[in-house]
Image (cartoon, rainbow, N blue to C red; front, side):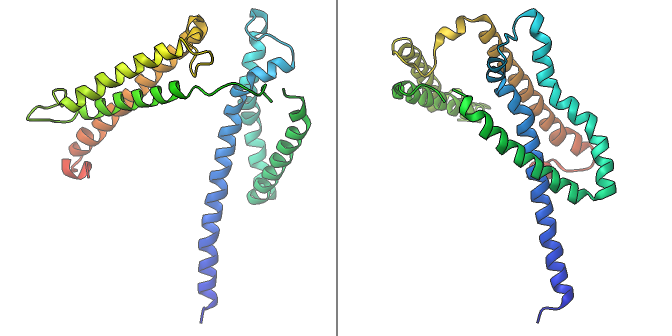
Length: 239
């Protein structure tokens, strides 16, 4: 038979998982809610009939982005005190209920006024397939190219690697040619003539390269150098 102590232990164990699930969901909702403003900026400025790129209107753009963070930062201390006074779980659940109700209400109020997109248009299957195959081939070749092959430290002499990289580049070249000739391309290269669009994509690319390189270097340094210097064997750090 199950004793009262065992039932209490099971209830406590379930409560830990419920609390972890709820807090994780809360963090996810906050993250989505804070970043979704950026995605909805065009619709917001269309709704208020304002061009955010005009010099006189830049402040509106900045404050729409910063408004969520400012309000959160200002109220976090006050709501923390309310949680101490009335109970953190109770206030947390109340906040979830208010957020859910307001989200549903806003979607019902503003959804009919949002234009859905005009139906029609054809899917560029050739472009989609060529881009996927070409990109995967290049990435596979690069992945195996940095691995040893045939007594060499790296695998750039591997025929499969060379064929994958070169073939992927050729396929991507064909993708560019196809996209410049179809009526409704998957990727409209004419957008790259816009300096703002091209500059933003270039900045995003350089940021991703820098972030990825930094993380890779930190991983190598922490696992391969710092930990062995602190008494951990090299084999243990790479298990």
